[in-house]
Image (tube, rainbow, N blue to C red; front, side, top):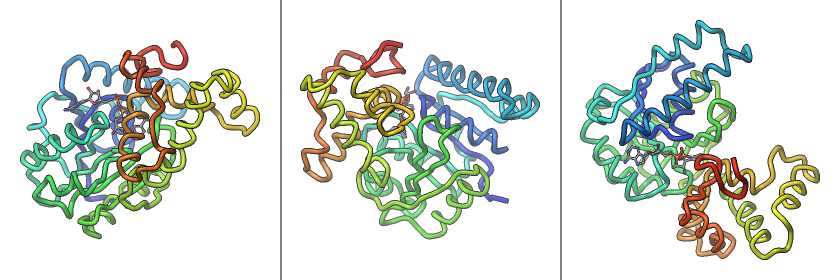
Length: 285
Ligand SMILES: NC(=O)c1ccc[n+]([C@@H]2O[C@H](COP(=O)([O-])OP(=O)(O)OC[C@H]3O[C@@H](n4cnc5c(N)ncnc54)[C@H](O)[C@@H]3O)[C@@H](O)[C@H]2O)c1
């Protein structure tokens, strides 16, 4: 039995709603926050739709679906996170925004042993940790998209993180949520994105240069390497703003051109073409 029973999730986007679903299905009390009622409603809709689909497919019973829904609550007020044992931040991949949230969480979460975690893909955890008065209780817990489906979670202790924090989170992730955990050092991109993002950027560069068409690039990797999804489809799924933000953090960290975002990626973000979540990216949805 984990000592973590009450979880808060900040950000009701693709990842936040998925993480909230995973936690609620595992029997935890989950409160989800976002900035506006509209964003919360979008997240709630995504979450209830996903739970309904899981029940239709027989992955969970209708009783389990209803029980998970009952364990979920939604708010626009982070003050309602006072009693949380663990908060997982999953807002936009922007260091300033995340740092501000960690400062607020540090003030409002009152339990002395509460853990503040981030689902960031590329921002150094230690910067979020030192923004709080409890840097030993801050770490990275990186889920994959879609969180209810993907088995992996990367655990990223910052230089300041205490071993007890890592143990408690690892126990929750593996024993309660049923995920497979791998450890990564606090280096931008951790393990998976350090390998994946240069590949996605290469595919975008190949597309931008006209060396191959969108469909030939994706079919090439799907039919030639048995990837379930080609790189341009995958970039659309992740969100092009998120891919660009991760590339920016990784480039800032390593100063290597393989992490530099191709101009077309930035232009698509500027145009609001963010991939699946906005209805258009490399593909139209
Ligand atoms: N998309 C992926 O494949 C993926 C995978 C793993 C990790 N991540 C990481 O998860 C995080 C979220 O990504 P996403 O894909 O869910 O993004 P998203 O764009 O779907 O959702 C972001 C959410 O954050 C909310 N938000 C923005 N500012 C906020 C604030 N100040 N307070 C509360 N909520 C706020 C937005 O309203 C939105 O609902 C990022 O750090 C990203 O790097 C993404």
